[in-house]
Length: 432
Image (tube, rainbow, N blue to C red; front, side):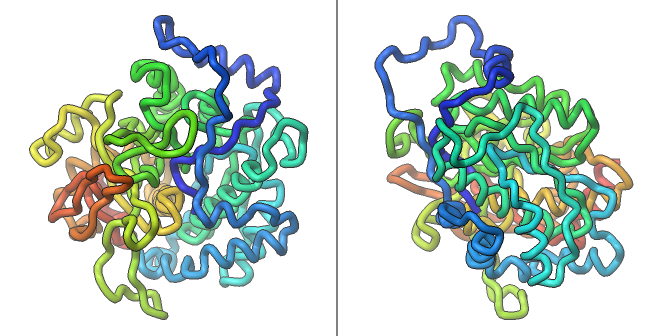
């Protein structure tokens, strides 16, 4: 999966509608002025999986890339016990989950259906929308082709994760015309897309596999100008999930290569309105059974570490008060829970979105904000609520000391990972 904290090059052609959106979500008065000296476009790294889609133009080529990246995916449905729910009729039917992406992939339905045929899954019920303006082709003037194709890979990977967990859920790809990058770039269009889905009552769950370092906004307070769309979605009962990032406890600079030499946080992972997914790694045999407990995605084994840490923008929400002695911070900690993220934590977010689609069906409707239930009811129950503790690994990276997994709640993995067959009914009971 592509990394949750990417730095793709920005498409230089902005539609008129996009320009209006930027104005609507502009930074507040008093924010730091834009630099006067020219800078190279802010870039963000995709994971190896997303990068591998560069140059893959046909459906067959894209499916081949997907198969190579997701060779173990069918086992994950078994590992998380989603198949037990399927056998009881909980397959995501009647639920709708969205992935929010830049550019998207105009062949995504064909790619996913081909993958599904290869792995015994039903055809996908999938719709692509462009609520923030027409999406350019990857070869259009002003569009960085490799970046656009990387986002196409992100899209294909996201929907495959969702479909593998909830094969009968409807999937909406909300594609925006401007590449999300560090700072505000691309985010106003994405928040407009969130509002569109909320106003038209299109979805139950929104998955966000992207992020930008909090330090890269004009000010920490300016980040909050993006929150109204998330507020409206939450009030409408939409559950939002985000990936925690793939730079360990640090994150990328606004311009140039490299990461900050100290702990930073990624938005929207740091936002208390979303449930944030950290990255763990499964160790499975040929049947999909675990050969040892899950541990933290880390540099030594994976070449990168999953994101975890503390926001500098958002104070600790009340539902985290029960773990304040563990975090030792007055600020919002993340992630909240974790799933497989060896291809980046943008793998774990859509996987969890698929689990939530199962819960939406079991609940006969939307779940809404699940964090209060996760922290006050489910997490403390542990395995009885389908919460599986992760106690091994840490997310240190690039010389910045990270956070270590430990018994019970910890900053590195949140509450740990899950057994969907127990977690889904427990979640439904907790949110009612």
